[in-house]
Image (tube, rainbow, N blue to C red; front, side, top):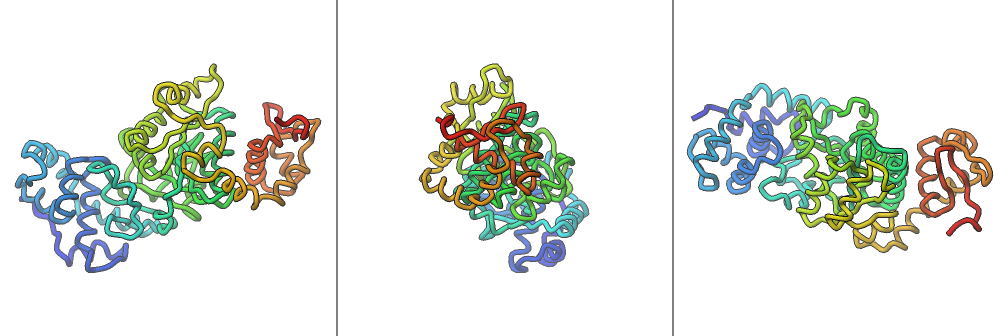
Amino acid sequence: MIAFDLSDHAARRAMAALGGDDDGARERYATVVWCHLIEPGDSVAGRLVAARGATAALEAVLDGAAPAEVSPRELAEARKRWLPRLSARAIADSVASAAARGVALVTRADAEWPAQLDDLGAHAPLCLWVRGDVAALPRLEASVAIVGARAASRYGDHVATELAAELAGSGIAVISGGAYGIDGAAHRAALTVGGLTVALLAGGADRAYPAGHTQLIDDVARTGVVVSEVPCGSAPTKWRFLQRNRLIAALATVTIVVEAGWRSGSLNTAGHAAALARPLGAVPGPITAATSAGTHRLIREYGAHCITGADDVRELLGLSTAAGANATTGGFTDDATRVRDALSTRSRRDVVGIARRAGMSVDSVAAILGLLALEGAAECDADGWLLRRPDDRR
């Protein structure tokens, strides 16, 4: 038997920094302990905790007696993985870091728990570490994951921005992984239009990864939600990135892959969405572009829906496309007019020049340009943006 203090007193003391109900402190503390022992998606731990609860399951593991839910061999192998990580000091440091960074603990017992994660069964997370608007988690019933290549092309970045801006602007939450490329474009566009966006991290929620997105992740936390299933202080690893993808697919109602190479990690997210029977879409690109080889593969071999605009995504969500379009454009009438006035039908202009003429921020102009492009009112190439004449539109 392994000695570890799981008493009510120890639990309340350990969890005091995170607040919460003292009556449930022991179960919450046991959940935090589990979170430190296992890697994401550990099905042995998932089965034990689902059957017995976090405290009773942990006591059984510490006692060394094989519970009925797992075989003696499974338990023996699991204890070899888990017990070397059992450290009250490491757990205390992690909880202190969470409290210092304003990271909240959300478990299945909390009203804010997003029930769609339970579709992962034994592979579901035992808890979530959340920075930002915890109350937004239950509001993700109509949400879209926009994912894709880190080394995104200009085309991919443009499409991700368009989709995220229009969808977020019409009240649809945008979920992604906080990475460079498509993820970052989706988060920025959603923030620009004042929409809700959620970043799921492979490392702890207390620090941004990649470091170059520190400001972006902070901005997401300020108005949206930053989520991780691993404790604060945890480093992102290749395995955690792959397992993080299952959370993106499970949390979102629909998953859209904008750009992906033939063996892109975004295809891993798509695979999880398909396994969960979630609607899956992919954006087509040039047949010569390596960054679109993966999306073409999803469309051709895996039945992903071909996504050519936000209305296609709304259809997958079961929403009225007309209602969504009206909701999106209504709030941008004045700003769109200013951007139109700053464009030319004869000479192409870059976003910075358009923003200067319109007297608006570059980010705001970029989002509006994306909407105008979707309407066919503007077009872009390597030389910049051009306002299309009504006669030129199809």
